[in-house]
Length: 104
Image (tube, rainbow, N blue to C red; front, side):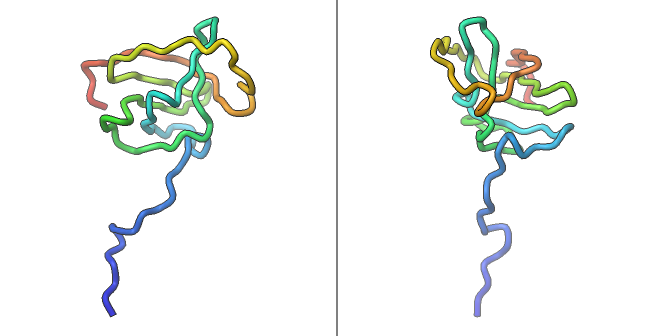
């Protein structure tokens, strides 16, 4: 009987809350929210990719002091006024930089 190659089997997608300290992943633009004080937060359940692509232009690195975000594609966020359950569903962002010239 024919066996499907291992590389063609889809594995469950990891989420941001599962990454380890020192690990770097990429997430979608919509996985970041900004409150009225311009504080940034990442969605805990955000699916992650291990390589940047057109749908995942934000690099997130988890360090001991938190999550560090680098944006590789120009974007503007809308302030979220009614931002509830921040501690429950969202991670605070330790740093945010724009890196339009960088590839990874």
